[in-house]
Image: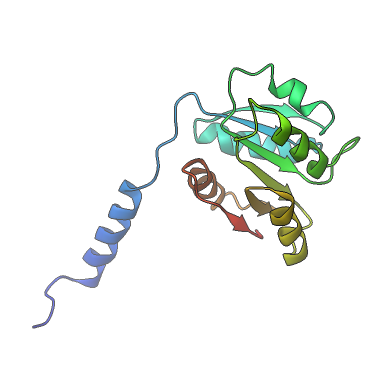
Length: 156
């Protein structure tokens, strides 16, 4: 027996089902962006804002735990690797030692997007990896997946 449903209908039905299963984002979701480059931060902040996500900004890894402790809550940390004063690895380790912050997902975000850097980030304890330049078409889905508990390890 052959299908009488046109291919267009099958594709639309499948994409509608996929769209319906996208994880929802809490209205009070907060992302801490640790990024020293203003242009990169503005891009990330705009993309998060478009998704309805509030973000906070820290320009270096220095005193990141002290800053994070001033925030009511954090759902995710997007951490640049190359930062002044203290790199993303050091900042991530400090966050992991904080009882209040230790379980928050921390995703490395770096222009040094290579298999070696991704493996180093994974071995160091990051929960995910996003290579720069960030893709505005893919970024919302990547963030939704991360916030739903999925480990996202992508070069770009």
